[in-house]
Length: 180
Image 1 (cartoon, rainbow, N blue to C red):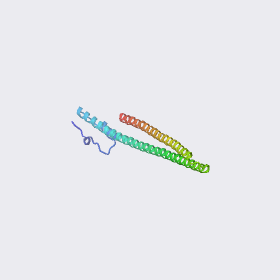
Image 2 (image 1 turned 135 degrees about the horizontal axis):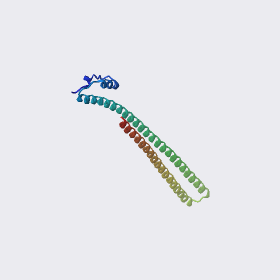
Image 3 (image 1 turned 180 degrees about the vertical axis):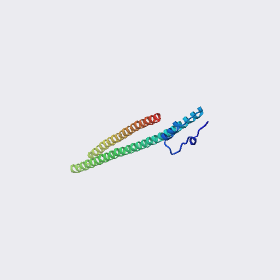
Image 4 (image 1 turned 60 degrees about the vertical axis):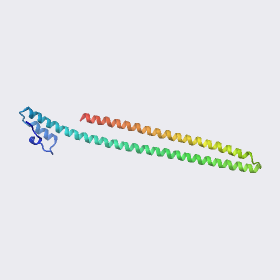
């Protein structure tokens, strides 16, 4: 004999406790009926468990998305801050170096005019300008290396944090699935 939910008297708006109470009070004479009643109970329990599991998974997905968005925003903000600071430092260094070059050239030209010699001072100016430009290149290369290292460190830290968060979330999801 096969029992359907309507034959048992299960209403779609009843709670699980109400249905379970009705099923436990049924008088069953046949083994098929016992099997069918237990399958109905199992089906109802599984439906409730699946619904709760879906809700838990959706909550976890929302948390993962929020964490990922926050991580991406943090990375972008940190990289922008580092790049802006480095650009400001490089501009200041370039302005200072250009100012020093202009002052040195003016001083040498004034001293040259005052002494009346015109050959050796131009060579000295060219050598000084070459040395200052080389120093400027060293500073610029150093700043670029610092920016690259800082950006790499920021990205690595954020990726590690994101992986840890994802591992925790996966463990949580597995625990929810196993418990349910």
